[in-house]
Image 1 (cartoon, rainbow, N blue to C red):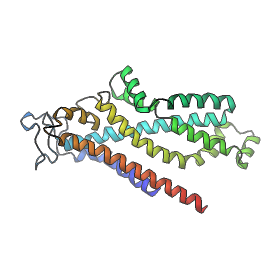
Image 2: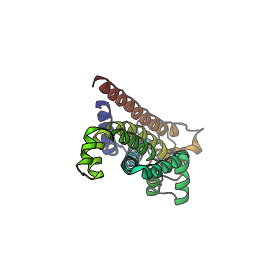
Image 3: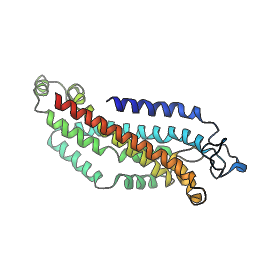
Image 4: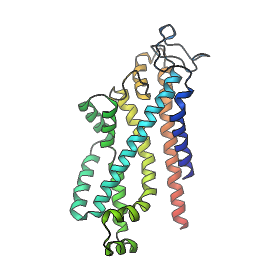
Length: 264
């Protein structure tokens, strides 16, 4: 849990403070300095319009990481509610929810998100919608599975016999048991959301210029990939490093929860 808390705090601080550390305006065009290599003034070089890459990376973190956090949080909320409906709503609700979930899982998430974004058009809100609609299924399956296993617990049976509403039981008896497992799932989905946002940005469906985002930076740099490869290296490293760090934190959390379960 400590590793996830440290990582979450670091990401939040980076998203909040990072733009203020940028040495230049990330959208300022400086044609005389276009495609400059890394140096004293521009530590990571400049792009085809002379914009400072370091400044764009720092500002882009607010979009890439911030939007990924929002998308994964929306998926967590939607999936948890749907999973609890399946667990508490009876056999018919369980069947309907799980068949719907299986239908969504039959399509690769990123492919479905690209199709939805393509139909709706480019834009930040369309990006959020496309990734949120395709990112709730794993939460739902976990919430449903744990919810069904809790139905035979004594305190849940007593709550039902006392006439408490299903939503009261879900809030006070189910959610505390769901949160650890859902947190592990969330770390993985957070990393997948970063990849999804970068992918849609690279395809032109994400955050629109001149706002910097790591995927759109890769899109802008692809034309000069052979002559000035550093333009693609830096945003690519930002994506890979963020995804790797989040996945490692998720693995550490899973191991910590497993050890806690073995000792209890």
